[in-house]
Picture 1 (cartoon, rainbow, N blue to C red):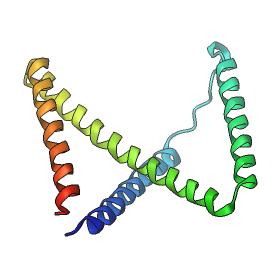
Picture 2: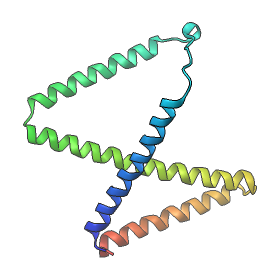
Picture 3: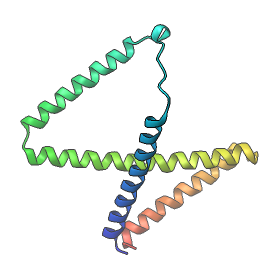
Picture 4: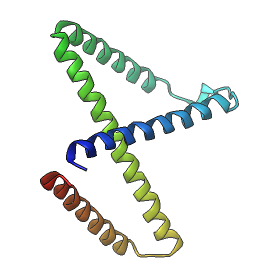
Length: 138
């Protein structure tokens, strides 16, 4: 398998994983009981300001999207979308590693220094494996 096939397969796997998580979250939201919010103890000013900031950023992005060359705007949108999927895949892997190593530490009683060394060795080996894939295309 060459590098092009590796990248395409990785993107398809990431898309499949994203679809699975979207289905799970959608089913969870659809089947949970409706609970009324008691907002008496909540400070909604922070939420309101973050929503106003998000609205301002969206307005700025819309202005930038309509004022630029459409090809550049679509290319930027595609690149940012791909970057979002890549970040999601990386965070999914890191969360799984944290769960596994956290379980090893709490259930088996392995000291944190040993878990840190194992994690460092795993990261270094992953970096070298990625370098080998990029350099030799295998």
